[in-house]
Amino acid sequence: MTFVIGLTGSIGMGKSATADLFRTLGVPVHDADATVHRLYRGRAVPLIGKAFPGTVADGAVDRTKLGAAVLNSPERMKQLEAIVHPLVREEEENFLARVSASPIAVLDIPLLFETGGETRCDTVLVVTAPAEVQRERVLARPGMTAEKFSAILAKQMPDAEKRRRAHFLVDTSRGFSSAEVQVRSILACLAGRPGRRHRF
Image 1 (cartoon, rainbow, N blue to C red):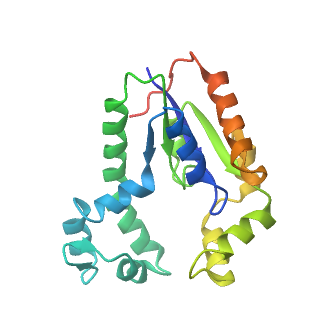
Image 2: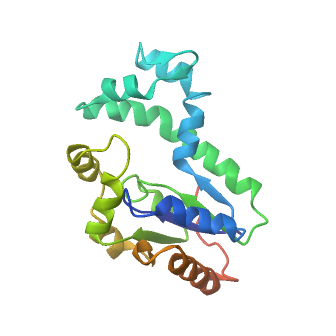
Image 3: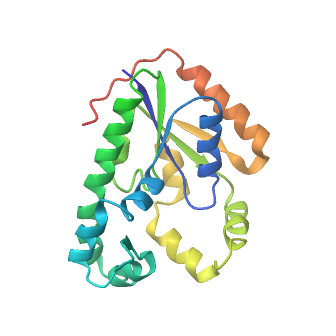
């Protein structure tokens, strides 16, 4: 059975770059965010359009309008999650079935702990960096403000808590080459381990 690594990390920590390192090293990666983007142009469109009128345009979900529809409404956010999460889980299951011959696979899930996704993984890797590095990276993004950054952080589990729950850490503050060394070391540590958890 494929050994499944749950990959997560807060905004600006370098999670996507770390996921790319795994891909470069031949490890299949399932990107939950990319899956949501595809669903918003495909199977989720009629479901979201029915639940949130006015959020679909040109056959795709308008993320800005959808964001406004659920803003500051925990009930509506739960309604949206009830539509999207099962579809993402189904895509995840299909991915794991496709890569069942691979000894290791990665589930890249930004809100891994927040959604209980760690229960579907054999181990959890948290990508991290010092808070000042994180802040500098995020505020350099187009359209990002300190207020937006604070709002995003408020929705995410604190980095210290994620690190406490992790089995492995990758610190991206020392650059790409250092992160690659850390990823290679983790893969060497996990080589030959069978997947154990019943995920579905």
